[in-house]
Amino acid sequence: MRRRCSTWRGWSATRCARSKPATDPTCCRTISILTPTSSSAASCAASRRRLFEVYSEGNFIEATPDTCYFQIGESKYGKPVIDRVVTRATGLQEATKCTIVSFDSTMRSNISVGLPIDLAVYETDSLKLKLQKRIEESDPYFRMVHTQWGEGLRRVFAELPNPDWT
Image 1 (cartoon, rainbow, N blue to C red):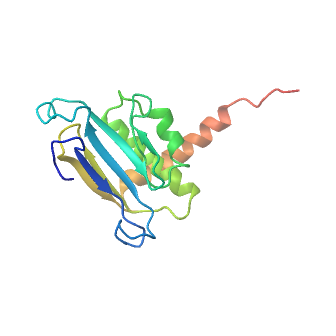
Image 2: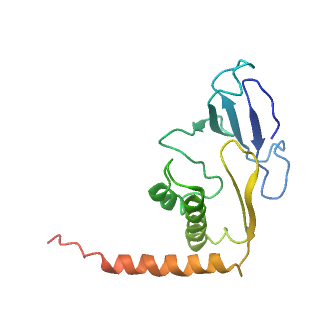
């Protein structure tokens, strides 16, 4: 990320699936932009940052207290897990665990999503990686989450009472 003290604090663009540059016209582009609330250079360091996800069509979403995270890529299968677990008060360890569960749920339902998972974790305002890990098929933590999550869902489902709609 380039660091500039102006209206646009930083930006990044995604790359296409076949490693086309984001500038290729056949590539779907999504840009994440982090900006301070003030454009004054003097107040830049102390101002609140805002995070936007801008889609190739031109529409955007902003991270807010109600939408405290962005999920890029395939989101329809694993997103419900994150929506039920992650809040602004969720710690990094819990959020990381939830991310692994979300990936596992997505991989279970979408054959085009799979391992490895490249995980990077950093704390707010640090821009220093707290954790960087590549999760492969043989990763013991991932295997344990995969097994326990699947068994736990089946157990909870079995414990739910059947509807009495007669």
